[in-house]
Amino acid sequence: MLSLFPGPPLAPGTPAPDFTLLDQDGNEVTLSKLRGKNVVLVFYPRDNTPVCRTQLCEFRDESTLTASKNTLVFGINPGGDRSHAGFRDKQRLPFPLLVDTGGKVARVYNSKGPLWIVRTVYLIGPDGVIRFAQRGKPVPADVLSAASA
Picture 1 (tube, one colour):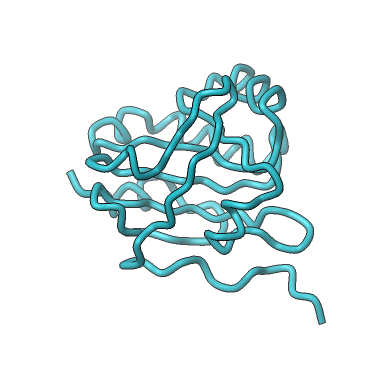
Picture 2: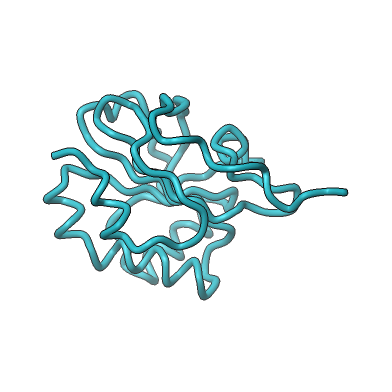
């Protein structure tokens, strides 16, 4: 039987797999170059869907808390740069949306099901180690509570 879930998220305490992806504007983002900051990765299925919009807007609305925790936020899914740019502009998201063509990075982060991205949120510490990992739509304050200052 085919499972819709790829297995559990990567466990806290695990080194975060490095990656390089382009954002909605074609800028390269490499995880290892963000060392020294906390990084939130929000793997979400699609742009402009109700739950995805709500989830990313909750992180938008917590931008003061995010900044106080020395944290960068990134949304990630296989959508194209034009879709991401339109979604980001329409929702006034202050953080980049990364283009994960074919879901390659989502697969490495156990967030790629056979049909779609499985909603998963990670917080990676300044040392590159996963501090928080949860499926679904955790409250941003809960995610950011794992951030080191």
